[in-house]
Length: 254
Image (cartoon, rainbow, N blue to C red; front, side):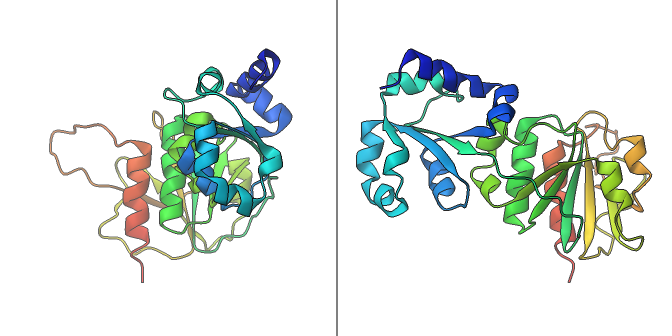
């Protein structure tokens, strides 16, 4: 069972300040833990109900995590969960060390000021689906270890590298002949009529402001998803939906 002090300590990880301080983040739910156990991420502790432990004896033995496993009640999980509906298992995981990688091979997604955790999580999931290994985030993007982000990746967070950096400096260091696509609402080349490069960076701007002016300076090819209505409504697409459409078209490149 969890003590009051332990419940209080675990609840601190709802705040980014304590996640970053201890370099730990929370992974919840049966599906997410299954993905976690297939990864190289370092698990610090797992809190689970007796039912979950009984149902997963084989994988617990295979992964040799008995010493990390603590049985607790559903009531206690409800006190520490970051989800609206608590699951049977909650784990604390060590944040991976960030290693800066300036090389660009294949398609890299660069995110400029994405604020919505659900959008970031969905974009990570998209990257995983399309075998895009790296996402570059500006420093003002939402925290990748925000509980809503982690959950919305559905496990893809364990396979896609997400790096936070000064986006302007990152783009400055790219080869001059590299295709840097910028997604804009109007005025860019129609994505359905364009030939794309295999090695490229795709920049997606924030949900409310798009790509910032200082980052637009480094875009050498502006692209647009054409709107098929003639009355200029809706005004824009959700960032993750726009990303999905653009990746799909770029990946069609032979």
